[in-house]
Length: 110
Image (cartoon, rainbow, N blue to C red; front, top):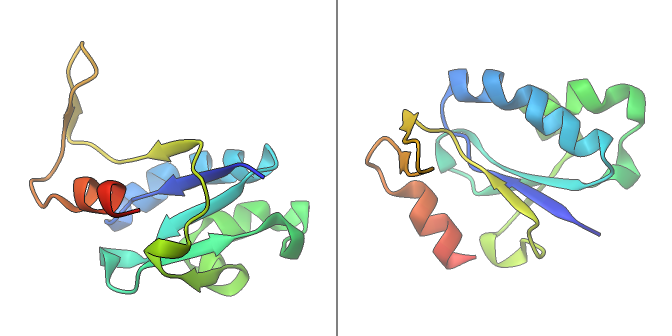
């Protein structure tokens, strides 16, 4: 089964990426998203436990806590795509983040 990982941290990023997360679920993929502020690791949303009519609810952080299961970074399955927030992106696709290095640390440690 294919998986998407979402590294969003801030509330605004979560709101903006909710549509992306819902689209991931609608395409039949498991979704792994970070818990707010990366304090608790990740949540795995597996389609087996979520009705398609609830994908929109599950894509929101409260729904993810309800329908998802906490997992350790070492438990993240093979990933198809990583969705990450950015302050800006250059015309060459170079990402400008917030300077905390969370994305780099998580991608390299998984």
